[in-house]
Picture: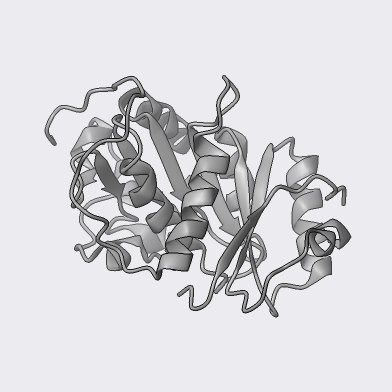
Length: 248
């Protein structure tokens, strides 16, 4: 969990049947229920900056389907993913789906305080509409596709054609799709998912993530032709100068 602060940075020098869903055009922020997931004010401000930087920047290049992944487990990727989804849902009208693709260590359903109903792993082995596997959360326009009951036996399906088809199906029903992916040090799932999405955000942990590991992760993403949208430095305890990012 994010204890002390989150900082978002672009990576300019890193070379190295549910109820029917309707897509709605963007407009004024929606007046919905207050944010439910706990965050300190500073954390909320930083996550808001992240949401604005990645999803709400003016222009046609703003991504709608984004993968979040860490360089290694324990970087707080799931924490950031679910809170970014909730804040995004408070800023736009269209439906948003947050997807738990971390089948080896799922956690989004726990953060949202719901049961791990039929979800992604079940959808990958079924032919029903994806609408039968997503579940509404506390906000009118926020939905969860949990990891599902068959997660332990379906991890290999993340790199399959059914996964790509399910992502395409999600894009038909949702304005935004945020995908919590396994850490890059564990498997190539994050890279494969990112190739099927519109970009990836890399989650680093202050005083933990190694520079070499970050460079290796970025190199792997770049070699795969993945669009790197930025990085989040999680659990920092002091302001991080831009020149430190530049040294990565």
